[in-house]
Image (cartoon, rainbow, N blue to C red; front, side, top):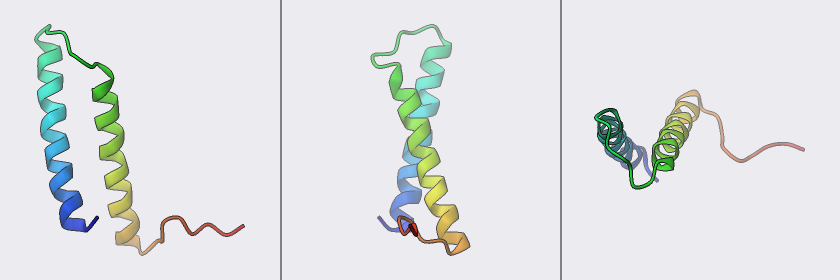
Length: 64
């Protein structure tokens, strides 16, 4: 996934998270309450990958 694709996905996820939080705050019941947690984790993963690329770190190349 390219950086542009990740940034697009990030904006989509943030919009969906805001919508779900607003629905929950209004007292509505969510179809899948664990979706909020999943979205938050996915956002964190994307931000982590972006930061690693910014710092020049390589993912998945751990030395044993």
